[in-house]
Length: 154
Ligand SMILES: CC(C)(COP(=O)(O)OP(=O)(O)OC[C@H]1O[C@@H](n2cnc3c(N)ncnc32)[C@H](O)[C@@H]1OP(=O)(O)O)[C@@H](O)C(=O)NCCC(=O)NCCS
Image (cartoon, rainbow, N blue to C red):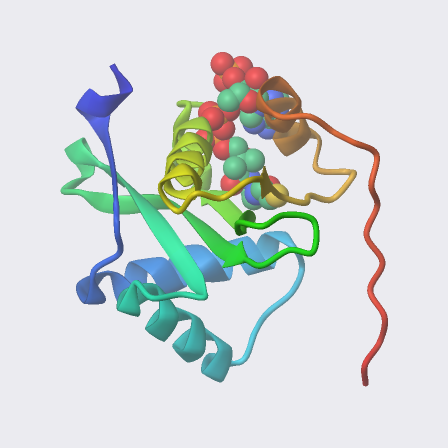
């Protein structure tokens, strides 16, 4: 049972360095980096539990409850719904802990949070070349054909 080896819960203030290490690995995976003020702002929102950025930590029990994965999500208003919708913005599992079902567990945990907040939709984006992630996503969600554009605001 996955619940025997991993737990899902909120980040604690003492998790800052582990979150920062994983978040930085995730950004490296996407060949990017962020200024420290973004780390500070995002962490402050996560720890407040008040959003708009929320997070879930995945800890491995036999690793002294070390955080080995995380999901960041946002609850958003939408012109398409009366209730809010949930955007799963970031999902990361430490390379040494992959293919154990942890990402699937995190996605389902975000779905539960979305339901608790009465969200009407849960969605996320990924790069078209992210083959591993897409195999996972195709198995649990539906690809509707939308593509994303980024306008340069300067
Ligand atoms: C994508 C990612 C989150 C998957 O995490 P994970 O915990 O290894 O995924 P799971 O163990 O839950 O995978 C479940 C299933 O998805 C598929 N899958 C996941 N990763 C895969 C890969 N690299 N190649 C092929 N299939 C993969 C498999 O079918 C897998 O089941 P199996 O291991 O029994 O074959 C992880 O590889 C990661 O953090 N990658 C870097 C960051 C990233 O891409 N994040 C997502 C951005 S949108």
